[in-house]
Length: 310
Image (tube, rainbow, N blue to C red):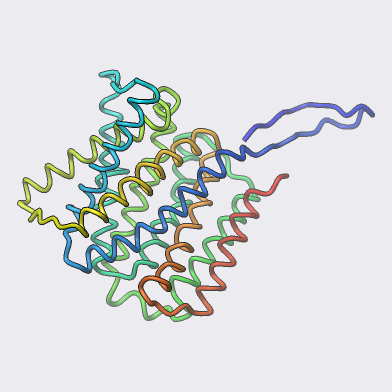
C-alpha cells in the first residue's frame, strides 16, 4: 500500500492523503487464499483414507522444495543462504512448515474440514496482534470492522446456528487447528520482521523454509518410526499439495505480505474457509446450510470492506 502525504490541489485546498492499493499483491494473496481452501479437502481425504498426517506433510514439502528449487535455479540462479540467516529460516521452517502442517493434518483426523479451515484461517486476529507488537503496525477502524465482519461470517459457518454441537466431541481437533493458526501467524510476521523476504525474495525464502521444514518432518518420521507407506493416490495428493497451495501459494503469500500492511493478507485469508465449504459440498457431499451461505456472504463483505479505498 502506497501513501503520499501533503499534496495540495491546484485550488489550494487543505492537504490530503492519496491511498492506492497494490493490486498485484492483493491478487496474489487472493489466489493463495483460494488455493489453501483446497488443502483441507485433500487433507481430509488423505487422513480419512489412512495416510499418516506427518507423511502427508513430508511429501507435500518435499515436492514444494523440488518445485521451488528448480524454478529458482532456472530463473534467478541464486540458491544459497548466508550462514547468519540459517537460524531465522529454521524458525520459519519450524513454525510455518513443520508445526502448522502437523497440527492441520492431525486436526483433520478429528474434526470437519470446514471447521479446521475456519479456525486456521481466522488467524487474522493473531496476525494483527503480532504485527502490532513486532512490526509496530497500527490497526485502523476500517480494518477492525472488516475483521469483525469476516469473523462473524466464520462464526456462522463454524457453529451452523447450534453452538452446543461443536465442542464436546471435536474440542481437541479444534485446539490443534488453533495451534496451526498461531504457527502460521508467527511465520507470516516473523518473515516480514526479519526482512528475509526483502533480502532473498518470496521464492527463495519459501524454498528454504520448505527445505528446513521438510528436514524436521523427515527427522520426526525416523525418530517416531512412523510407517511410510506410499501408493499412487498418496503421491498424487502430496504432489498437488506441494506444488499448488504450498509452492505457489506460500510464495504468493510471502510476496503479498512484503508489499502490503500485514493485516490485509490476514483478512483476505477468510476466503480460504469459504473455498473449503464450497468444495466440501461438491466433493465430500456435505450439505450446505443457510448459515454457511450467510457466513460466506459476510466473509466476502468483510474482505471487500477492509480493502476499500479511503
